[in-house]
Image (cartoon, rainbow, N blue to C red; front, side):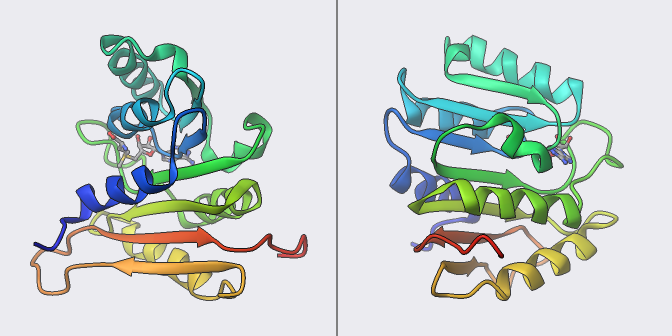
Length: 192
Ligand SMILES: C[S@@+](CC[C@H](N)C(=O)[O-])C[C@H]1O[C@@H](n2cnc3c(N)ncnc32)[C@H](O)[C@@H]1O
């Protein structure tokens, strides 16, 4: 069976994140992915989760608490484009669900410029073999612009340093989300 998009994002992350690792959730939202990452990193690992909305930070902290895992994550009320200011150490894997907070304000959305800035910082801090997973929702206002900007940026990354995958069902209606996954294969030069 062809694995669906959201389960496939988890499959990719679980292949590269193990106990004791550092992982990043670039868009904490309601905390589903932060919880998943917290389960992967174990008691010796750490998750850094970012969101610009207080509502999302609270929802994520509550979800972690319900599972007794709040000690495994830093839930940060700030943009993922400031990632380098918060995360120390090598990152094993990261996920971004782009778009708006389900059940929240649909006008507060991720944006191409800040998403690309975060990817750039992550590529610097990622372990060799580490993976960044982007789940790209693009139906909302501004979604197409973000999708186009991100695809242009990742398509131009030299394959010597980063392998870029697009995982997408191409015959589904209503523009379903798809995955872009980046695997760091070699340290990138400082100029990139
Ligand atoms: C699609 S939702 C994330 C859903 C989440 N993964 C979950 O499991 O519920 C996108 C989130 O990105 C957040 N966001 C928008 N711009 C951001 C930025 N620059 N940095 C961090 N989060 C941002 C929004 O506030 C929203 O909560």
